[in-house]
Length: 113
Image (tube, rainbow, N blue to C red; front, side, top):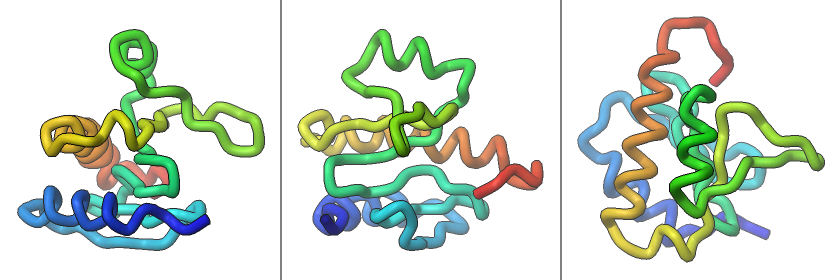
């Protein structure tokens, strides 16, 4: 199933003032990289968000996000936010801010995108 193009357009709009931002098709979705590091990705069911692993438990407890899983395994430092929790501009902007802040802390560290 392709990624949610409307969601990708909304993400693109909110990242318009960030620099540098690149887009790359990854994991069946459209990833948005900030300073060369993946920050968020629009998928078919919502948004993948890069988070500081030290903050992940707090975000899981206080939001409707869930652990990002691939092949049945949780991916450390990534959360999945369903589209029903991204309906407003404010909701989406909050998650994008978390993802971009985390990506910026990794810029220049040699960590994978």
